[in-house]
Length: 272
Image (cartoon, rainbow, N blue to C red; front, side, top):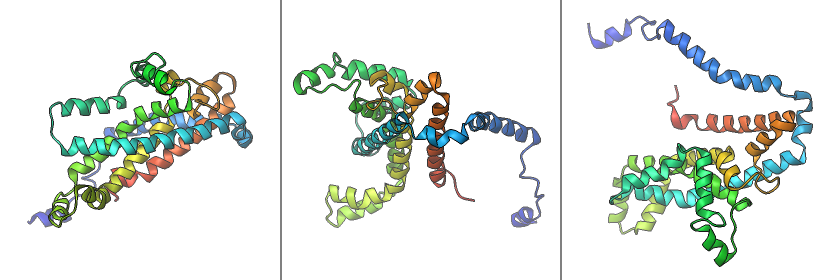
């Protein structure tokens, strides 16, 4: 009997997982999904639109969009060259630099906010020079909220682009060089198109992380309505005195996050 015959005559139930695996998987799924159903259950559906129409909600939504889009743009501007250096060059301390660049992914956000405050605050390592020389004061400002979001979100873009740069076929770049293309032309016309899907996925993850940023923002930029109060901060404040608005804002964040995950599904899993 050939290997093909064995595969064609195999029991269709052979690939099914054991029953205890199914039970554990179902329990895990319930554990993750149940809080979301709890949020939907307590949502004030009849007053949802009126809650979403409040000034504090629109201020938070507007500021969240400004902050997250600006942080994503800054992450692309700085993160793509950084990812290229990490993926394509070799120098002493590269592993340490990569670890430091990716550290905000696992660093407690409040610690990140405190680090930003000590570095870029009014009396910080660099912040004092910025204020005395240019009059720039980042804490408790919209620019400070953008800086905090960029700090925690850029590693998601860097790790995605670096992985893409390591996996592309470099023969296309070498062929362009032999045809007389400059290094900038090769990067712009050959490398970027090849890594564009991964860069788009990394940018989407970066944007979603910036949109949901809380700890570093409230520590470094504060929670000022219309200036630094993004949607996660508004949810935190509304939980104390306006639970309906908090739930409405939470639903908006859940919907956006779910849309991003669905859009990126084909980047993570092979389609059946």
